Image (cartoon, rainbow over all chains, first blue to last red; front, side, top):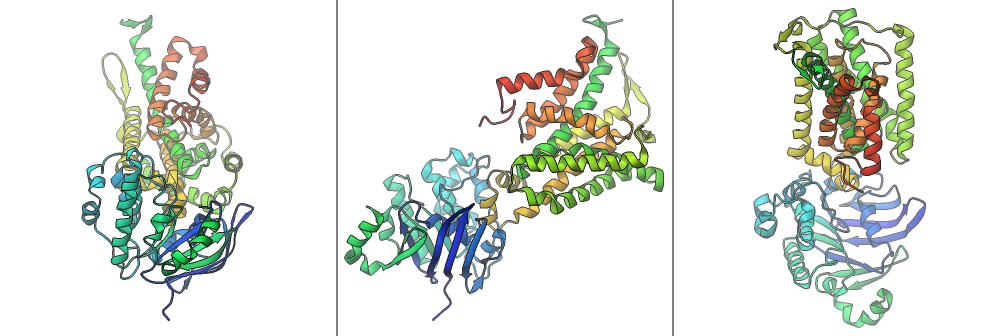
Length: 237
Length: 295
């Protein structure tokens, strides 16, 4: 079997004194779309932040393409080919749309599929139109598109997307779903944290359900209908 | 003789020029403080000491090695910048997780050490530093005599402020600084070496203080306390302009310098306190400063 793109074993993480992750284990393979499900506070966002080394304390193992990164400084981890779209989009105030877009560095990763600025503007014509507007003046949907677009420029092949459908109008959520499918076709590997189960259900190959800082279930897309009752209970839908 | 509100125009213009010179020092120093506070969240109390260090390096270069003003105008800020980098990497870095207060206390301790060191060697009386020969003399404008060196100080300080403002507000490197100021963790997640940017920013910020130190050397006496006298006013400028605001630092620095000069003419007794009176008023009416964003 090939080396997983992302392999997390017995991951523990803390916010200050609070022990948030209690031994998370999961794997993501090249080209997969995997969704982390769970209620608020289950540790999904923390898991993504831990992968990027954004917490003060984390223990266990995080391997990216076989490389152990648990002790790496945050700024080196992205260069293994990771792109991060944070919770609440992380658009920098005081930067224009285009400055936001150009901010992430081109990664030093081999064989990445970096899109050019032109390609990105073709894909997201709204961002081109509003390229000189302050990033925080964009609409919620435009900000979300910007947050995804800016990691497509870097050559990252593994995208970690935190709640990208949150708070957006249905038509925008559909556009995002379309975008995720296109990225999957192009061979991107995607880990999503989602509250919107219907959005995730139509996109992901596999689901992990988190509870109290642990993975408690793994569900394949093909098993979704038979596991629905269990999922409803775990997610409190 | 022409008089304005009962003051001869020569005296008035002289004080305005003096105010502009002081205002230039305030502007560049508070600009450095603003950039450092924005990115590091450290209130660098040692900023005045680095200013003093810049002046002393210039004096030492000339006195011990015969190195000219012009060379030291470049070399001295470099040396001060290196000293700043050592301070940031060696000490300050360990305090970022803690409250602002710890950075303030640490840099305050550094001030005492640096001033004490120079006092023990050079004493408290100032050391003279000559105006470079190319900038000696003045221009008679008819209504006033304009010393060339003071004009030079104002022009070069303004150019530096403008350069820094353009760099921060109009370039992609500046965008990186602005982004790192608002959300350093996310910038790091994009593969950017934020700790290095922080170190270089601190180095550049204090190097600017060193640069002004060299500019000030021929005007003020080079002495261990020259920074301490100035930095208290500079902190008031930063508070009035708005913590972390670049444009605010520049405009407020110059404006308050001139205001201080005018106060010397019309109400000499209040000249030393006018800046602080304004600080009190601004803090009451607009706690975030004139140019700061209201929290």
